[in-house]
Image (cartoon, rainbow, N blue to C red; front, side, top):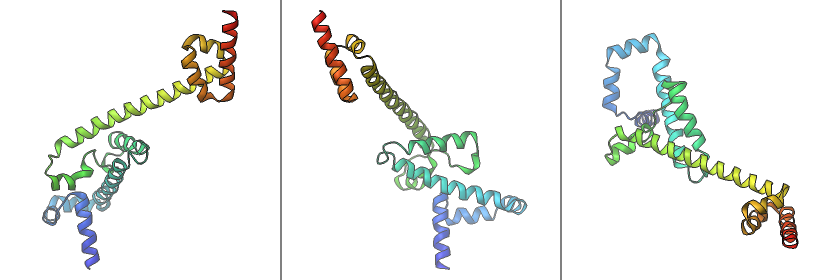
Length: 184
């Protein structure tokens, strides 16, 4: 019985309820009638929100150690909440409800703060991907057309970029520099 009580306390804490609120909700005749008509919907939705809220909390906590890969789940959670299964996913900001109560933070601003932070992190991730694609393109250009590459970016930049491309890019850039020096 003690294990069941501990499990119930943990579930209520995850939902952001205390015992008095839970008993008050169960004493509500409208809620009891609705549960009688469709017993699994409210309970399944609450359990799903509890699990997805914990997953969202873990994704935010693991953002730096995973080098931003958990941003994929946070975006999935946001879009699933707003466009797919609204009742099954917690809204952004609600996964910290227990901490908000402990620290005395207002609850209404946290969801907007999380959406803003998510937007800026997405923009940062987009910039990183674009920078990596640009660098890969420059290395490929240095390997395939070294003389044109040296002419467009200059000798110092060409040597730095060619160093990333390996021996073939370095040899091509060096040959172009020798050819340009001999002809010029």
